[in-house]
Length: 366
Image (tube, rainbow, N blue to C red):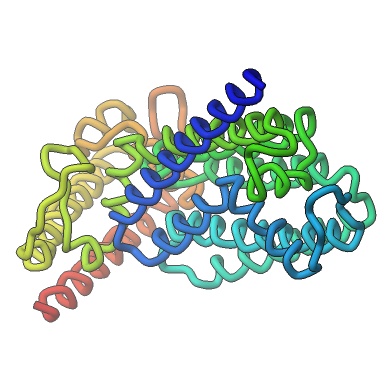
Protein backbone atom coordinates (compact mmCIF):
# COMPACT_ATOMS: atom_id res chain seq x y z
CA UNK A 1 0.00 0.00 0.00
CA UNK A 2 2.79 2.42 0.93
CA UNK A 3 4.71 1.54 -2.25
CA UNK A 4 1.61 2.21 -4.38
CA UNK A 5 1.10 5.62 -2.76
CA UNK A 6 4.77 6.56 -3.40
CA UNK A 7 4.53 5.44 -7.04
CA UNK A 8 1.33 7.48 -7.55
CA UNK A 9 2.91 10.58 -5.99
CA UNK A 10 5.94 10.24 -8.27
CA UNK A 11 3.58 9.74 -11.24
CA UNK A 12 1.68 12.94 -10.47
CA UNK A 13 4.97 14.80 -10.00
CA UNK A 14 6.19 13.67 -13.44
CA UNK A 15 2.85 14.66 -14.96
CA UNK A 16 3.04 18.21 -13.53
CA UNK A 17 6.67 18.67 -14.68
CA UNK A 18 5.70 17.44 -18.15
CA UNK A 19 2.80 19.90 -18.31
CA UNK A 20 5.08 22.71 -17.17
CA UNK A 21 7.61 22.11 -19.98
CA UNK A 22 4.86 21.82 -22.59
CA UNK A 23 3.26 25.13 -21.55
CA UNK A 24 6.66 26.90 -21.52
CA UNK A 25 7.46 25.66 -25.01
CA UNK A 26 4.08 26.80 -26.32
CA UNK A 27 4.53 30.24 -24.77
CA UNK A 28 7.96 30.67 -26.34
CA UNK A 29 6.73 29.63 -29.76
CA UNK A 30 3.75 31.94 -29.50
CA UNK A 31 6.13 34.94 -29.61
CA UNK A 32 7.00 34.21 -33.21
CA UNK A 33 4.78 36.16 -35.57
CA UNK A 34 5.43 34.41 -38.86
CA UNK A 35 2.52 32.08 -39.75
CA UNK A 36 4.66 29.14 -40.87
CA UNK A 37 6.52 29.08 -37.54
CA UNK A 38 3.35 29.39 -35.47
CA UNK A 39 1.48 26.58 -37.24
CA UNK A 40 4.39 24.14 -37.43
CA UNK A 41 5.65 25.02 -33.94
CA UNK A 42 2.28 24.51 -32.24
CA UNK A 43 1.64 21.18 -33.94
CA UNK A 44 5.15 19.80 -33.49
CA UNK A 45 5.35 20.66 -29.78
CA UNK A 46 1.98 19.01 -29.12
CA UNK A 47 3.02 16.08 -31.25
CA UNK A 48 6.34 15.62 -29.46
CA UNK A 49 4.36 15.34 -26.23
CA UNK A 50 3.44 11.68 -25.69
CA UNK A 51 0.04 12.64 -24.27
CA UNK A 52 -0.97 13.89 -27.69
CA UNK A 53 -0.48 10.40 -29.14
CA UNK A 54 -2.23 8.86 -26.14
CA UNK A 55 -5.23 11.04 -26.96
CA UNK A 56 -5.38 9.28 -30.32
CA UNK A 57 -5.61 5.96 -28.50
CA UNK A 58 -8.28 7.32 -26.20
CA UNK A 59 -10.44 8.66 -29.07
CA UNK A 60 -10.05 5.35 -30.89
CA UNK A 61 -11.33 3.50 -27.82
CA UNK A 62 -14.35 5.79 -27.58
CA UNK A 63 -15.14 5.22 -31.28
CA UNK A 64 -15.04 1.46 -30.80
CA UNK A 65 -17.08 1.51 -27.58
CA UNK A 66 -14.27 -0.53 -26.03
CA UNK A 67 -14.63 -1.71 -22.42
CA UNK A 68 -11.39 -0.56 -20.88
CA UNK A 69 -11.22 -2.25 -17.51
CA UNK A 70 -10.26 -5.91 -17.62
CA UNK A 71 -10.16 -6.18 -21.42
CA UNK A 72 -7.44 -6.61 -24.00
CA UNK A 73 -6.81 -4.35 -26.98
CA UNK A 74 -8.50 -5.71 -30.11
CA UNK A 75 -6.73 -5.99 -33.50
CA UNK A 76 -9.17 -3.50 -35.07
CA UNK A 77 -8.36 -0.98 -32.33
CA UNK A 78 -4.62 -1.43 -32.83
CA UNK A 79 -4.90 -1.04 -36.60
CA UNK A 80 -7.05 2.11 -36.40
CA UNK A 81 -4.85 3.63 -33.71
CA UNK A 82 -1.72 2.89 -35.77
CA UNK A 83 -3.12 4.54 -38.91
CA UNK A 84 -4.28 7.61 -37.00
CA UNK A 85 -0.79 7.99 -35.57
CA UNK A 86 0.84 7.48 -38.95
CA UNK A 87 -1.45 10.17 -40.40
CA UNK A 88 -0.30 12.55 -37.65
CA UNK A 89 3.34 11.64 -38.32
CA UNK A 90 2.81 12.47 -42.01
CA UNK A 91 1.37 15.90 -41.12
CA UNK A 92 4.20 16.56 -38.65
CA UNK A 93 6.87 15.64 -41.20
CA UNK A 94 5.27 17.84 -43.88
CA UNK A 95 5.05 20.78 -41.47
CA UNK A 96 8.67 20.29 -40.53
CA UNK A 97 9.67 20.14 -44.20
CA UNK A 98 7.78 23.37 -44.91
CA UNK A 99 9.50 24.94 -41.89
CA UNK A 100 12.93 23.99 -43.28
CA UNK A 101 11.94 25.04 -46.80
CA UNK A 102 10.98 28.46 -45.47
CA UNK A 103 14.47 28.79 -43.98
CA UNK A 104 16.43 27.54 -46.98
CA UNK A 105 14.24 28.71 -49.89
CA UNK A 106 11.89 31.48 -48.66
CA UNK A 107 10.96 32.58 -52.20
CA UNK A 108 10.80 29.23 -54.01
CA UNK A 109 7.35 27.66 -53.71
CA UNK A 110 8.18 24.88 -56.18
CA UNK A 111 10.83 23.45 -53.88
CA UNK A 112 8.45 23.64 -50.91
CA UNK A 113 5.78 21.73 -52.86
CA UNK A 114 8.31 19.15 -54.08
CA UNK A 115 9.67 18.44 -50.58
CA UNK A 116 6.18 18.26 -49.04
CA UNK A 117 4.80 15.88 -51.68
CA UNK A 118 7.95 13.74 -51.55
CA UNK A 119 7.72 13.38 -47.76
CA UNK A 120 4.00 12.69 -47.93
CA UNK A 121 4.59 9.85 -50.41
CA UNK A 122 7.40 8.54 -48.19
CA UNK A 123 5.04 8.59 -45.19
CA UNK A 124 2.39 6.69 -47.16
CA UNK A 125 4.94 4.06 -48.23
CA UNK A 126 5.99 3.75 -44.61
CA UNK A 127 2.34 3.28 -43.59
CA UNK A 128 2.00 0.38 -46.04
CA UNK A 129 5.21 -1.26 -44.76
CA UNK A 130 4.11 -0.91 -41.14
CA UNK A 131 0.77 -2.52 -42.05
CA UNK A 132 2.61 -5.59 -43.35
CA UNK A 133 5.13 -5.68 -40.49
CA UNK A 134 3.15 -4.21 -37.62
CA UNK A 135 5.38 -5.69 -34.91
CA UNK A 136 8.38 -3.77 -36.29
CA UNK A 137 6.57 -0.43 -36.42
CA UNK A 138 9.02 1.58 -34.31
CA UNK A 139 12.10 -0.01 -35.84
CA UNK A 140 10.94 0.84 -39.37
CA UNK A 141 9.97 4.31 -38.19
CA UNK A 142 13.43 4.83 -36.71
CA UNK A 143 15.14 3.83 -39.99
CA UNK A 144 12.75 6.07 -41.96
CA UNK A 145 13.50 9.10 -39.79
CA UNK A 146 17.25 8.52 -39.82
CA UNK A 147 17.10 8.50 -43.62
CA UNK A 148 15.07 11.71 -43.62
CA UNK A 149 17.53 13.49 -41.33
CA UNK A 150 20.51 12.29 -43.37
CA UNK A 151 18.94 14.02 -46.39
CA UNK A 152 18.40 17.21 -44.38
CA UNK A 153 21.96 17.21 -43.03
CA UNK A 154 23.27 16.68 -46.54
CA UNK A 155 21.30 19.74 -47.64
CA UNK A 156 22.79 21.67 -44.71
CA UNK A 157 26.28 20.54 -45.64
CA UNK A 158 25.87 21.85 -49.20
CA UNK A 159 24.04 25.01 -48.17
CA UNK A 160 25.47 28.23 -49.63
CA UNK A 161 24.22 30.25 -46.65
CA UNK A 162 26.81 29.70 -43.93
CA UNK A 163 24.91 31.78 -41.36
CA UNK A 164 21.73 29.70 -41.61
CA UNK A 165 23.79 26.52 -41.84
CA UNK A 166 25.56 27.02 -38.51
CA UNK A 167 22.49 28.03 -36.51
CA UNK A 168 19.91 25.62 -37.92
CA UNK A 169 22.27 22.66 -37.54
CA UNK A 170 22.15 22.91 -33.73
CA UNK A 171 18.35 22.74 -33.70
CA UNK A 172 18.34 19.73 -36.01
CA UNK A 173 20.85 17.94 -33.77
CA UNK A 174 18.43 18.26 -30.84
CA UNK A 175 15.44 17.10 -32.89
CA UNK A 176 17.39 14.12 -34.27
CA UNK A 177 18.28 13.13 -30.70
CA UNK A 178 14.57 13.16 -29.92
CA UNK A 179 13.71 11.02 -32.94
CA UNK A 180 16.36 8.48 -31.97
CA UNK A 181 15.93 8.31 -28.20
CA UNK A 182 12.15 8.04 -27.88
CA UNK A 183 11.53 5.03 -30.19
CA UNK A 184 14.48 3.11 -28.71
CA UNK A 185 13.30 3.66 -25.12
CA UNK A 186 9.74 2.83 -26.16
CA UNK A 187 10.82 -0.52 -27.62
CA UNK A 188 12.57 -1.63 -24.44
CA UNK A 189 10.37 -0.24 -21.69
CA UNK A 190 6.68 -0.37 -22.59
CA UNK A 191 4.01 -1.30 -25.10
CA UNK A 192 3.05 1.88 -26.96
CA UNK A 193 -0.55 0.73 -27.42
CA UNK A 194 -1.04 0.20 -23.69
CA UNK A 195 -0.49 3.89 -22.86
CA UNK A 196 -4.17 4.75 -22.92
CA UNK A 197 -4.79 2.52 -19.92
CA UNK A 198 -2.00 4.22 -18.01
CA UNK A 199 -2.38 7.82 -19.15
CA UNK A 200 -6.07 8.64 -19.32
CA UNK A 201 -8.22 6.22 -17.38
CA UNK A 202 -6.70 6.19 -13.91
CA UNK A 203 -3.20 6.83 -12.62
CA UNK A 204 -4.20 5.09 -9.40
CA UNK A 205 -5.08 1.76 -11.06
CA UNK A 206 -3.53 -0.57 -13.61
CA UNK A 207 0.24 -0.18 -13.93
CA UNK A 208 1.62 3.01 -12.33
CA UNK A 209 5.22 1.94 -12.96
CA UNK A 210 4.54 1.95 -16.72
CA UNK A 211 3.01 5.38 -16.28
CA UNK A 212 6.21 6.67 -14.63
CA UNK A 213 8.32 5.21 -17.43
CA UNK A 214 6.00 6.74 -20.06
CA UNK A 215 6.09 10.23 -18.53
CA UNK A 216 9.86 10.04 -17.88
CA UNK A 217 10.55 9.28 -21.56
CA UNK A 218 8.11 11.99 -22.59
CA UNK A 219 9.82 14.41 -20.22
CA UNK A 220 13.27 13.59 -21.66
CA UNK A 221 12.04 14.42 -25.18
CA UNK A 222 10.45 17.70 -24.02
CA UNK A 223 13.66 18.76 -22.23
CA UNK A 224 15.61 18.06 -25.41
CA UNK A 225 13.23 20.28 -27.39
CA UNK A 226 13.23 22.94 -24.68
CA UNK A 227 17.03 23.15 -24.82
CA UNK A 228 16.85 23.46 -28.60
CA UNK A 229 14.18 26.15 -28.78
CA UNK A 230 15.63 28.26 -25.96
CA UNK A 231 19.01 28.51 -27.64
CA UNK A 232 19.43 32.32 -27.83
CA UNK A 233 21.43 32.38 -31.07
CA UNK A 234 18.89 30.15 -32.81
CA UNK A 235 15.94 32.32 -31.75
CA UNK A 236 17.79 35.49 -32.62
CA UNK A 237 18.51 34.09 -36.07
CA UNK A 238 14.84 33.21 -36.54
CA UNK A 239 13.88 36.81 -35.85
CA UNK A 240 16.38 37.92 -38.50
CA UNK A 241 15.07 35.47 -41.10
CA UNK A 242 11.41 36.45 -40.64
CA UNK A 243 10.49 39.13 -43.23
CA UNK A 244 10.79 42.67 -41.88
CA UNK A 245 7.09 43.39 -42.42
CA UNK A 246 6.17 40.44 -40.19
CA UNK A 247 8.79 41.15 -37.53
CA UNK A 248 8.05 44.86 -37.25
CA UNK A 249 5.82 44.45 -34.18
CA UNK A 250 8.55 43.26 -31.80
CA UNK A 251 12.32 43.66 -31.58
CA UNK A 252 14.91 42.10 -29.22
CA UNK A 253 16.43 44.35 -26.55
CA UNK A 254 20.12 44.07 -25.60
CA UNK A 255 20.42 40.90 -27.73
CA UNK A 256 18.01 39.06 -25.39
CA UNK A 257 15.21 37.54 -27.51
CA UNK A 258 13.02 36.90 -24.43
CA UNK A 259 12.82 40.64 -23.72
CA UNK A 260 10.82 42.45 -26.36
CA UNK A 261 9.34 45.92 -26.76
CA UNK A 262 6.91 47.45 -29.22
CA UNK A 263 8.55 49.48 -31.98
CA UNK A 264 6.17 51.26 -34.38
CA UNK A 265 9.08 52.83 -36.28
CA UNK A 266 10.50 49.48 -37.42
CA UNK A 267 8.74 49.49 -40.83
CA UNK A 268 9.94 53.02 -41.58
CA UNK A 269 13.53 52.11 -40.70
CA UNK A 270 13.73 49.12 -43.04
CA UNK A 271 14.14 51.08 -46.35
CA UNK A 272 16.90 53.22 -44.79
CA UNK A 273 18.78 50.13 -43.53
CA UNK A 274 18.27 48.50 -46.92
CA UNK A 275 19.81 51.47 -48.73
CA UNK A 276 22.85 51.29 -46.44
CA UNK A 277 23.26 47.59 -47.17
CA UNK A 278 23.00 48.20 -50.91
CA UNK A 279 25.62 50.93 -50.70
CA UNK A 280 28.02 48.54 -48.92
CA UNK A 281 27.41 45.89 -51.60
CA UNK A 282 28.08 48.40 -54.37
CA UNK A 283 31.40 49.39 -52.81
CA UNK A 284 32.30 45.71 -52.42
CA UNK A 285 31.60 45.07 -56.14
CA UNK A 286 33.74 48.02 -57.19
CA UNK A 287 36.64 46.72 -55.05
CA UNK A 288 36.41 43.28 -56.65
CA UNK A 289 36.45 44.76 -60.16
CA UNK A 290 39.54 46.83 -59.38
CA UNK A 291 41.39 43.84 -57.93
CA UNK A 292 40.76 41.48 -60.87
CA UNK A 293 41.68 44.14 -63.45
CA UNK A 294 45.21 44.67 -62.11
CA UNK A 295 46.23 41.04 -61.54
CA UNK A 296 45.27 37.51 -62.58
CA UNK A 297 46.87 35.96 -59.47
CA UNK A 298 45.47 37.28 -56.22
CA UNK A 299 46.32 36.24 -52.67
CA UNK A 300 43.15 34.98 -51.01
CA UNK A 301 43.85 36.50 -47.58
CA UNK A 302 44.59 39.92 -49.09
CA UNK A 303 41.41 39.75 -51.18
CA UNK A 304 39.28 38.81 -48.15
CA UNK A 305 40.70 41.67 -46.07
CA UNK A 306 40.10 44.11 -48.93
CA UNK A 307 36.47 43.02 -49.16
CA UNK A 308 36.03 43.17 -45.34
CA UNK A 309 33.86 40.04 -45.13
CA UNK A 310 33.91 36.98 -42.85
CA UNK A 311 35.86 33.83 -43.73
CA UNK A 312 32.73 31.70 -44.23
CA UNK A 313 31.10 34.25 -46.53
CA UNK A 314 34.36 34.72 -48.45
CA UNK A 315 34.82 30.96 -48.99
CA UNK A 316 31.24 30.64 -50.26
CA UNK A 317 31.83 33.43 -52.79
CA UNK A 318 35.23 32.13 -53.91
CA UNK A 319 34.03 28.56 -54.53
CA UNK A 320 30.99 29.86 -56.38
CA UNK A 321 33.13 32.10 -58.63
CA UNK A 322 35.72 29.37 -59.21
CA UNK A 323 33.05 26.91 -60.37
CA UNK A 324 31.10 29.40 -62.49
CA UNK A 325 33.99 31.23 -64.20
CA UNK A 326 36.66 28.52 -64.28
CA UNK A 327 38.94 30.21 -61.76
CA UNK A 328 41.53 28.05 -59.98
CA UNK A 329 42.63 28.02 -56.35
CA UNK A 330 46.38 27.42 -56.08
CA UNK A 331 47.32 27.20 -52.40
CA UNK A 332 46.87 30.70 -51.00
CA UNK A 333 46.20 32.25 -54.40
CA UNK A 334 43.17 32.64 -56.68
CA UNK A 335 44.12 32.27 -60.37
CA UNK A 336 41.84 34.35 -62.61
CA UNK A 337 40.87 32.94 -66.03
CA UNK A 338 41.46 35.76 -68.56
CA UNK A 339 38.93 34.26 -70.98
CA UNK A 340 36.07 34.51 -68.49
CA UNK A 341 37.10 37.68 -66.66
CA UNK A 342 34.83 39.86 -68.82
CA UNK A 343 31.84 37.58 -68.05
CA UNK A 344 32.71 37.82 -64.38
CA UNK A 345 32.74 41.64 -64.45
CA UNK A 346 29.49 41.70 -66.47
CA UNK A 347 27.81 39.50 -63.87
CA UNK A 348 28.88 41.91 -61.12
CA UNK A 349 27.44 44.82 -63.11
CA UNK A 350 24.13 42.96 -63.61
CA UNK A 351 23.99 42.27 -59.87
CA UNK A 352 24.64 45.96 -59.34
CA UNK A 353 21.65 46.87 -61.58
CA UNK A 354 19.43 44.33 -59.81
CA UNK A 355 20.14 45.93 -56.43
CA UNK A 356 19.40 49.38 -57.92
CA UNK A 357 15.99 48.19 -59.16
CA UNK A 358 15.24 46.58 -55.81
CA UNK A 359 16.18 49.78 -53.99
CA UNK A 360 13.90 51.82 -56.27
CA UNK A 361 10.96 49.47 -55.63
CA UNK A 362 11.46 49.68 -51.85
CA UNK A 363 11.59 53.49 -51.95
CA UNK A 364 8.34 53.50 -53.92
CA UNK A 365 6.58 51.59 -51.12
CA UNK A 366 7.25 54.28 -48.51
